[in-house]
Length: 282
Image (cartoon, rainbow, N blue to C red; front, side, top):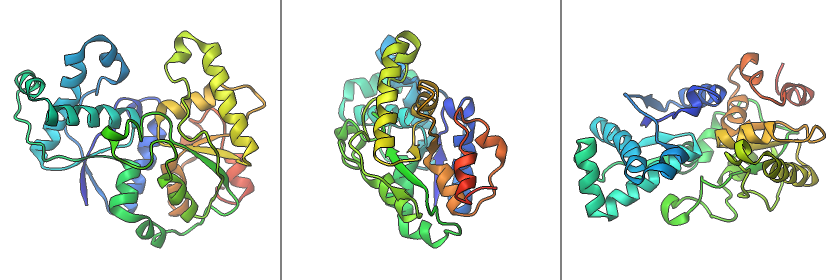
């Protein structure tokens, strides 16, 4: 199994631990990741400033994957969403496609599929195949899965899981031995970039999420989004001292991959005391 790996900007900077765990998990599962001269997808910044730029940036990365003949694997929910939106637009809007082809200097084929890492692991690789490689079940770990805004919405773009009550991450983490709690805030917004302009509003959203997670009985949260993960740990009141894991970090533990303490040190809420109390980390 081979993919054009698109880490995106966050995994090269503030979310390096996500990139590390994603690569380690793929290596353990014999998933080949190939990279080329990828560039920023534009994320929210380009989308809010210039429509054609916000399309051209993801289109360039699609063109690279097309050249290599490999589907795209994007761990970051925001990158995944921008790539999927652009691919859908190029498929359906001929005028835009022709203009973008001229800007990017490529001929769009429509043959490349774009997957989030969660989607690829669950839908293509298969939960059963991951479980077969499990060496250390996540026994005793109580979590809630937090999907955020961009992984499963809008459904006509992502076409992956349920837009209001997604279950794929719950099923995966549960099969790896964790006690996944049910809650109603799986896709509520974390505030994201609002934290830069309206911190009070973001604190309200985050503390509400954390309070509901703890009421559900969770000791930690699990997410796929770099911005969600950092916001959950950064914009919180002190009493909500529960860590937020990237889902790949938990897969890494379950597969028995040795995890370097340096990567857990990048968390703003130290997850080691919780993991050590459950004998999941040394």
